[in-house]
Length: 68
Image (cartoon, rainbow, N blue to C red; front, side):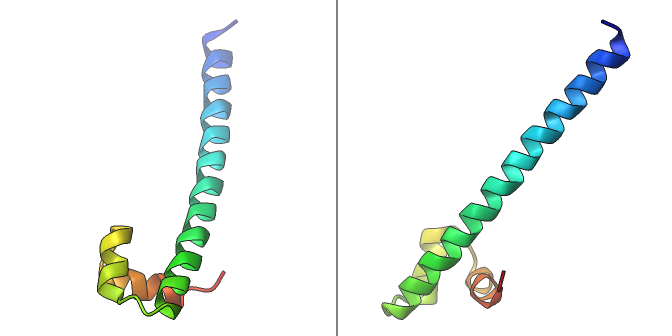
């Protein structure tokens, strides 16, 4: 197998892993948004949600404002 073939296979493999990671990130973001919405409806403060999620308060507001 030539060096170019090996490199191209590695590129394809990395691209596939990246696509899977992007899909997982999208799914996790949707889950986080759903849980943050549920927390707000339950009366949890934005400050507490932000602390639990590892986000800033503005990050929580931005997440809640996003619509897929």
